[in-house]
Amino acid sequence: MREDHSSSPVLRLTSGSQDANNETVHVVSRKALVEFSRTRPRAAEPLDNWYRRARRATWNSLAEVRTDYPHADLVGQCIVFNVGGNKYRLIVKIKFPKKTIFIRFVLTHEEYNKGGWRNDCIA
Image (cartoon, rainbow, N blue to C red; front, side):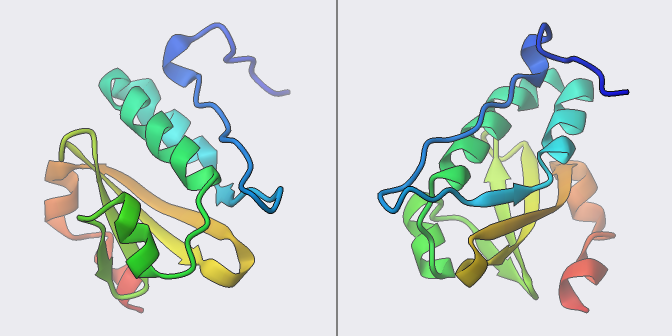
């Protein structure tokens, strides 16, 4: 049975608008953002902002990602976003032609520095 989280303000990660071609980017899986925000409520708003922007993005390359997120870094096959004033790291894999973003990790700055996530990106 699915849980209804609609009454919790921390879990209200909204979907974004559509781009000019009436398409949206598919983000897999939003659940990772929700779960991270559940234990770190201050992360909810910046993650929601990232999610909404990513859903309506028309990115075709890292260069285009950097027009919205100048500090996004490529690490192996992953793109690392600094979220929430550099407090959190969102690590994703983007399949540009398929308009799909795979969320791999949502980490605090401290968790990110431990580097355990790198194996998934370098392999």
